[in-house]
Image 1: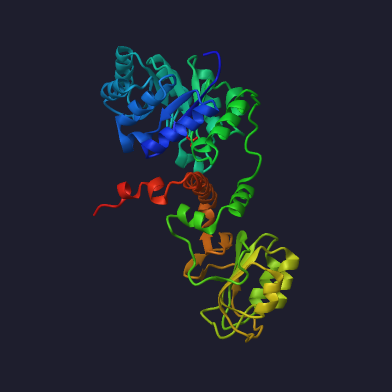
Image 2: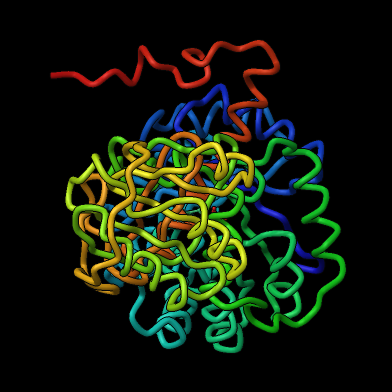
Length: 429
Ligand SMILES: O=C(CO)[C@H](O)[C@H](O)COP(=O)(O)O
């Protein structure tokens, strides 16, 4: 292969949307079109034949992820119009050999996907010996969320084979030049194109980036900075979706609607409005943190007010969440400080010094540990366990991007029910 190829992966579940998006991607310069595994599972082989009929001059890749019955699956895909059939590189050699035999018989090519292969560089060489036509160095979507890097895998396998290698897994305009510089002949892009509100523009930008290969220097920000960057633009609702509806506090009212807080939790347990520990937490918290307080169900007396809020502003604390009451509401509203509470009351407590800073607490019905991430906006407050914060932030970004595309389709006149094909996907008992 002389020139690098952009393969757009149509990882969708609706055929009509896949064809529309494929058309937009082709306008932007997509060379090859992949019928993604979710589309094949949802629509079957008719998705392959429909894509081939709609785009007869493009190579159509059927991402079957075949793990058994290689000959049957390759025959089905080939007879439906696929030019290349994707099988799992981790499959037994007998499956690969049968797939290759069937591919030769029906005049199609085999791409072997290295997803989850324990020894990718060794296996890539074996797959070449078994006769596959392309190797795909692929980091799966769930793996990407935990921070696995697809270009690391590409670099491990590229020198092990002489057949063309494809790079796949979260590739974007930023990382595509690195894939080409590392030697990929094919760059496979799904999410960065199909979830874009401007599919044609995103495809064009990735194609242009592929023409300027630059060695990949690894991620340019730390995981913690990436979490903060993502949480600043996604919403608490996006995060709740990413957490399968877990993590939302109940009864939290934003004192200053329109404000947002994002940061790591500094937890405070206090009792009956005792404001000593909440106020001491301001000195312990770092700029960008969020103070999360449990006032042990006391709503008749407030552990927080205006002066504490001024102190928080001065220290750069990102926000305050109180399972309990706040007072001096008018003054805090003037400051437009990000604060959520379950109640308001004028009574102040006493600074007695009971309670604890930095222990596990309950807040709005959720368990919060120090260092857990908090995102709070007008819809409410969501707590993200620190052990999954990177993964959840990246999944929330996927939710956000998916909604960008759906919003675009709504603007074009479709109803939400039509875009989501609700009637088809209703749950059957
Ligand atoms: O095969 C796939 C998932 O199993 C995807 O098609 C592949 O990972 C490319 O999509 P993305 O760019 O979103 O990772």
